[in-house]
Length: 216
View: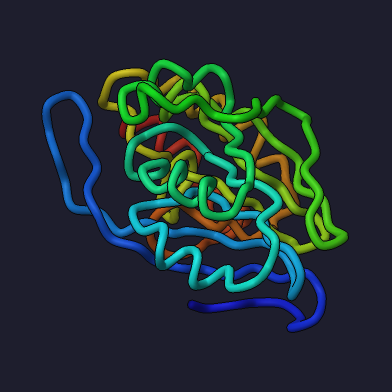
């Protein structure tokens, strides 16, 4: 578990969990970033991946305000119901990913919806929901200006867009999402991704035309 920010004030903590991702008949081993945003009293969990026990241990005795899903691929939501049941926190998902969610959890619906421009509050800081479809229909990013960061899920990584070769995805759509919703943020904004290392908006912005030319 790595943390950045003040121990007392709002901060970002990263937990890496391991499991599998399955879609379109294939299954792959993956490591996922689980992000905790909050302070010593309460946290927001972004992408409850693979291991509810590990996430609950990282949360400790803090109140979980919500379990937020950046999208509904199974590796990002597989532990969400167990974590929600344990903590009493609502699961929030963009409704455009409902069909994808049901493939993993047909008998457990999310508790609330995310919408573009919606604001979520935790530990005195706000995160704005940015609908960034393309990797899948209901993908969102979460922008926290006070923390100088945006949680991009699988929309933007170090080196380019998230994958768009599977069901529910579209390359022109993800490019438009990145162009209009993410690359317009301040260049120093840290992009904390669904997998792998963080990057910054300023480091990625100059490469947009390269990504378009290569097609992924």
